[in-house]
Image (cartoon, rainbow over all chains, first blue to last red; front, side, top):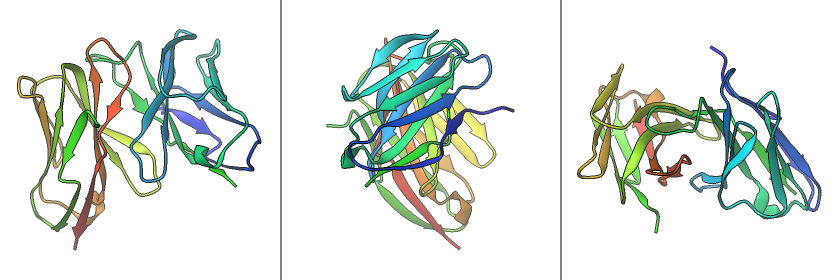
Length: 115
Length: 109
């Protein structure tokens, strides 16, 4: 069965550069969630989209922006990168907003290293 | 203070042992996930629960909604079960996951 796809899987950037992470949800899934997991930390919710509209927002820096496109894939754009942005970035997808009946399925993550 | 508490934080077991990982949370939820993460790796969803009990192979997950508590049991543990096990919840009225800090399990042969 098709899973959530993230690209790239690994990314190395310099401070102050820009990075774009992509997430392709499971086919027919219309909801995407982005999470950030710093070294030794538990994942933290960044932002989510449902039917191409932002549905919730967490602790996402103003330097980051995201959107969901007409084919439901999502991109997380990160500008003015800082060393502290080095983390594993997961996306998850669900059919409808996640809850008791709609499970989130996780992608493999993109490991971003800022030098 | 993390709203999702897991215990123990670390556990070392011998192959074949029965293992229990606990999770408690503070307010009403619509769903609870048990997740597995190998070192440097992605997250795999083991179970999603909103009530009762689920079983998959050697893994059993239970939840007690009244007591706001869930457990993940691993029977006949194996070294390949070594990973971090994370409990994550979706609070009522939300759709985002709130994660516990995870429990690092090491199963020795």
